[in-house]
Length: 301
Image 1 (spheres, rainbow, N blue to C red):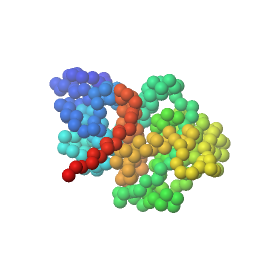
Image 2 (cartoon, rainbow, N blue to C red):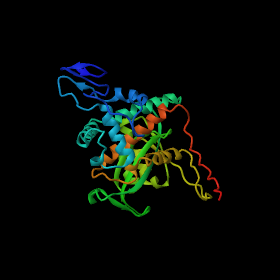
Image 3 (spheres, rainbow, N blue to C red):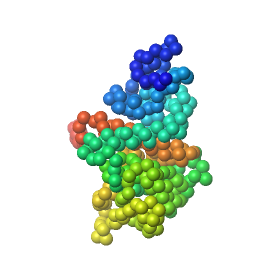
Image 4 (cartoon, rainbow, N blue to C red):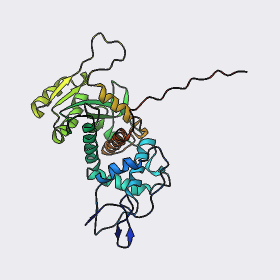
């Protein structure tokens, strides 16, 4: 028997809305899910199997704790006391990662956004880019490297988005990997899980990667080159959406540098950040607007 819902009595205990036993915590942090966002994501979480042990803490509190760490950048052991114990949160984080829960959530949220934008549920084209970030002292030497072009000692993230900038795939490798070599894993993941067969990329992915993708994946890599006369910053056709997505992800302080010993945990943190961004995009009541700077008033003596 599988259980989901509010107020269902199991073995003398009342299940709260978030699949757990007990009272839910008060929402006090900007990273906490709103009621509307939780109603969207709750059906996407795994069901509780009965008979079996009922989780002590509501799933909503666990998700809020993961998003708090992602957004604030604190360590697991510094999780505030009003959240469940950090060992419990990390245990469910690893459990959901092993079951591919975040990939399923991303797929469902991505389809909802695309349909709301008047697009097909599944994209046919994507955009790929990479980002090198410094590695903390917790990153082992076997999974870190040096990017000479960016002068960064740490790791490199390869992400693929659709043409709306919605995350499709993420791969984290040592920063020493060349773009044209490290992108193969990300492109293979996209090939196996999505119908994308046309990918836009910058000049760093030109060369043998284009030939490899065409022969092995039957995928077209279109290189969007910088105009020869360009001076300064210019928004490039098709490529700007993935660069915007990387900028949005960096708003989560946990991603400002790589703190994870395991690259797969880094990938999972990026997926949770993308989930948070997609939920905000789906539930905002009006288009996002940049906050206006306040003019300083002259002081009078």
